[in-house]
Length: 205
Ligand code: MN3
Image (cartoon, rainbow, N blue to C red; front, side, top):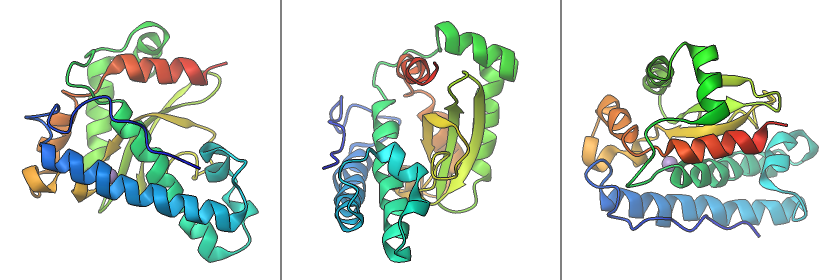
């Protein structure tokens, strides 16, 4: 049985960058629905003993195309939002630390340049989707964008996301309307780079 993370902050704690109604609707409606539908699909596929990363990386093992699609969309929705909500904080560390900070500098030149590149991907994703910073077990970093609830795991890249930028309109439309760029700029004020650094340290071997 897969469960949503418990939000480590109140619905209104991310104001003024993300409004309380958006956080509540996003978490208690959208994310809750993905999670419930993922659990149904997992049961139909008989994959209750697998974790979400395994399921998303092994969708080809599911023969029924409708169940496979349900697992990809709702498993992605479950997993992606757990990452998204867990990395946000009303009191975030605004810089990465340790090994992640070093790797960002050697890969992207600087932390500011990484943020520029992530913003470019987030704004360039046509329609609903995500932009990602991901890592592999060697500690290499990759930035990418995905449509819908796809992610670097279901895309079989060999990378695991450590930072998730949700660019579905449900993540920002109530406050920002069509202004995705303003939302992304605000989102960077909430990303706790201590959490992202911990995510990185967990992946590298
Ligand atoms: Mn969302």
